[in-house]
Length: 476
Ligand SMILES: CCCCCC/C=C/CC(=O)SCCNC(=O)CCNC(=O)[C@H](O)C(C)(C)COP(=O)(O)OP(=O)(O)OC[C@H]1O[C@@H](n2cnc3c(N)ncnc32)[C@H](O)[C@@H]1OP(=O)(O)O
Image 1 (cartoon, rainbow, N blue to C red):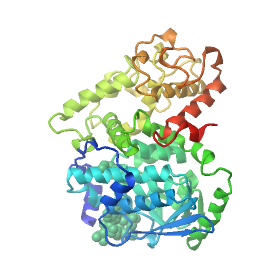
Image 2 (image 1 turned 90 degrees about the vertical axis):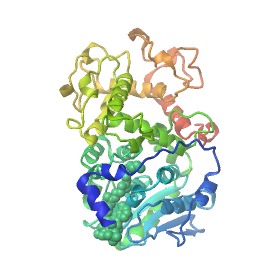
Image 3 (image 1 turned 180 degrees about the horizontal axis):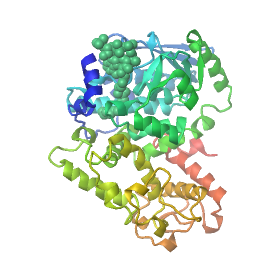
Image 4 (image 1 turned 135 degrees about the vertical axis):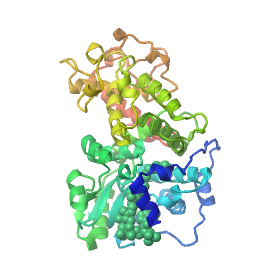
């Protein structure tokens, strides 16, 4: 095992990933998640121990899977089953996650799950990773990570999936999304969750470099919220939990409102009951990887069949897709036809976001954006120049168009056929007849900025967890 880890660090994780092919098509019917979880839990000794204090409504979930609480399929399955049970137990309102191991909270995904396993097993494993995050991040309970040891990669994801993080004040412990250092592309929902936690720039640096932070540095960038002496991690978590549980309606609106952004990204495009969250995440991840590392995404990332996806085929498709999505008619080959040597995966991945921003205002990115060469596309360059494109202007427009993008299946070709003049503030690329009250509730004269922002936020909530968020739950 140590060899695998060492090799993955030395040769890049692609060597390990090439063993992996996630071909699972997820064509399965929706079954009870609890049932499917139980079906695949093959472990014998419990890797998770849960104690629920019925007087406080707080459960402590202890990870107890030596040597490092790595997130294997069995571990994740057990974790999800326990989470699901607590979620259904109305007496439980708060959840604290901690480790029984000394020095380690969780080492992240179990590397052995990604080595030499069948495509079916890999698919199951990846679904379980997603389910863990969805269940944790989407939990109705207040959640606190009591991080009493190192917490790299998936361990960090688990931590930032919680509402609050308390870490042992020990500089030898580290935390961070270090996937890039292993040659792994952190999926976009890892990235989004990190951005939500530490902000754009810190997340960008962190992911491009695959940084692990010591506990004090993690506190500095906001990756954890509090450091306490090691022997006080759990008791502090318990004290803190009582504050969270004292917030009126904690399990509903306030908790949800501030966590929605990421989930809305993850779920855009869902329609119908057949799209379970995990199914969607899997598909979205594929797309995002497809975009992210042209020429460097191998078959194992994508669920594609081998014969179709040769590297050149990939490049072509990526280029097409990028052009379509990004700044139609304005992205030149220098952005899209890059080869591996110019654009390392992490560099590409985490700059794509910039181009995404650019793509958000089609029809309104006019001459100042055109003719850009690769070198001009720096972080600060989102395609805008000139006084009319101030940051706040951009932000608001982007947000509005995000709304448009967020209702796939309803926003259709009218985006692409718009001319500049149609893209007024009140026009998000939709034609009137398709975009009626259920999306926005606005008519032209009501399109003041504050009104829009408010409505957009409301709508995001609606979109956030299809099949789980209903209007009745979140009507303001
Ligand atoms: C399907 C698509 C893939 C894309 C997914 C992208 C997302 C990836 C997220 C991930 O989580 S990838 C995993 C990344 N994890 C790490 O980089 C952590 C590596 N481990 C460590 O840094 C250290 O082990 C530790 C956690 C800081 C603990 O250090 P300590 O010195 O206490 O223990 P070690 O001697 O290093 O390890 C003991 C033992 O445990 C094995 N091990 C460590 N980490 C893992 C792991 N992630 N999976 C499986 N096994 C692990 C290690 O090999 C040792 O085993 P041995 O048999 O005793 O040699």
